[in-house]
Length: 144
Image 1 (cartoon, rainbow, N blue to C red):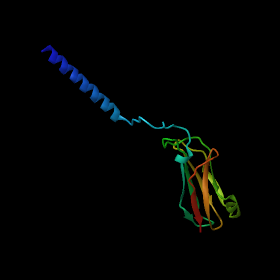
Image 2: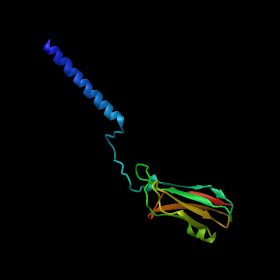
Image 3: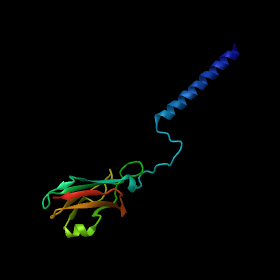
Image 4: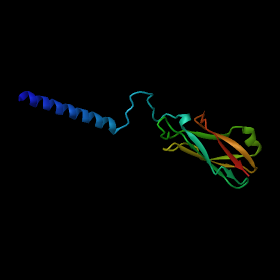
């Protein structure tokens, strides 16, 4: 009789441990293999740039260029200096394109913004750089 009670007690203890392990593994994201993600370090390939609107009236309307500098986890990296330029600088220079920083340093969400104005119609491919490192994604805007 004592032997049966001991076996049942051990079986119950074993089940409790298994349930505890399953609950802890399913409570959060668990990675057994793979590269560990780093937080707070700028990752150019995880960041992006976009324009809104993509087309505007030359000589009057502005296009807002927004840049998000993100880390490996997709979180914003604050306090980084951002520049926005034409891929082909001579094209922008000949059209007298003006880049006005609205917020040239990233905020706590990793966001920076520039306004773009062109007195001349044309299409311009833009790139963003964070602390001198280019974001691979570019954006094409047009003034009509």
